[in-house]
Length: 272
View 1: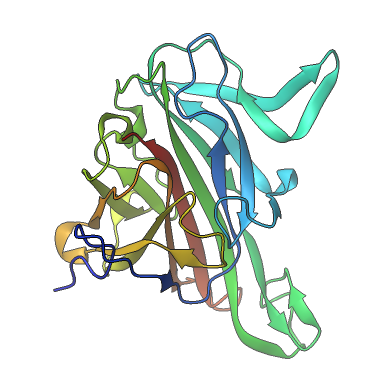
View 2 (view 1 turned 180 degrees about the vertical axis):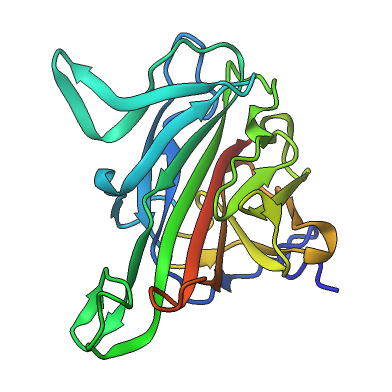
């Protein structure tokens, strides 16, 4: 039975971990994880392998949906940050509705796309579209899902943060990170289309300042199939944390692709 694996022990032993190779992925970086109700939730979406900055911003035209869920679970609008009269940011976004004290979830769902390597390089095409070309490896249908937990007025209130959204791959915190402190345990559940996976999945976690190197994380744990996809992460340090999961599943139509390739992230702040 697979449970908690290596990590950073409470006695202070530090393990430097590199993940298995995976594609570049996006995550949400909020300007503030505890904004005032008089402010808006401002954020950008980084992209790459090296947390927290990545190598670029996630392309706007690759986003399918961008929204918030409030403490009551109600959906809120977001849009480009207003810089001035008639001026809007190309890389930063903000909430567009009045805020109340409590826990908000910022959500980004990317568009899905087919793609794989051929003798002509990487192409964003399905098997059917690549018929007659030399395919190197698998053709995948890829999609990314990002969440950030924001506690307006520093208040942990409401259940919107734990709402199951039915993503292809989804990280659902089972406790509000805003109610936890350093060295507390954050239980979370990894879901596929709203249900636990039939197999255990590795969960990677890190915090801002641990490392800016490519694919280096501070902590790993299993989201165990024996425990309904639940993993437990000890919040070893105060600061901004990111949880990352990637997983591949068979694609149902082998004429189009070999696999689904899903990646999901969750970011939040841990107080001392």
